[in-house]
Length: 210
Ligand SMILES: [Zn+2]
Image (cartoon, rainbow, N blue to C red; front, top):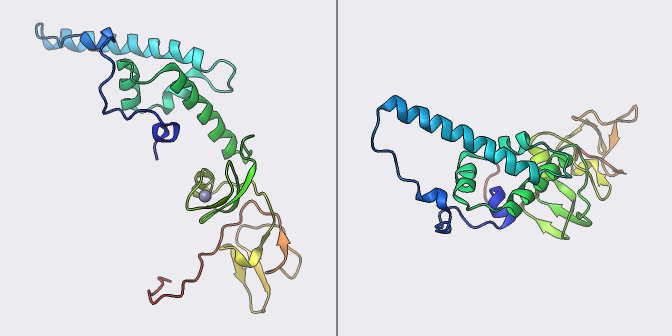
């Protein structure tokens, strides 16, 4: 899901408002190629500094720079901003989501993530709603191999990083979590930011890839 879908921004395929005078600019039909290239270059320089100016407001009070927000915008986003299809409020929401994303990458729970939920791939997570989800914002941490802040304890035996030894209950952590001398007991409850749930065994006839 793109950030625009997440923020509920109108898809870019819709026609932007006609009162935007920048859209009225006609393509250059005369002049040689060098002139056109030069003027296009100056245009893009101007637009770039205009965007940075707009982003200076966006970033007020946030722990992020305009250059960082600009860097995170795709070329289509910038094009849509130029056409007036992305409002200042949307840019501000985007910047806030970037700050939040960065904090989550450091394992910080966003303030409004107050409910305990379970992500199919991440296990127990903090979220703005409770229940089961098939994917979640912490999935980015999981993919990047970063810690995930947990709302509760887990069992090592349910984790993909638990490597069983020749013992009915003992194993070792592939993520080097602290262990007792003998290893980890599969049913012990512990807090772990590297826990990832073992896929549930299904009772159908589909063969499972090993
Ligand atoms: Zn997840």
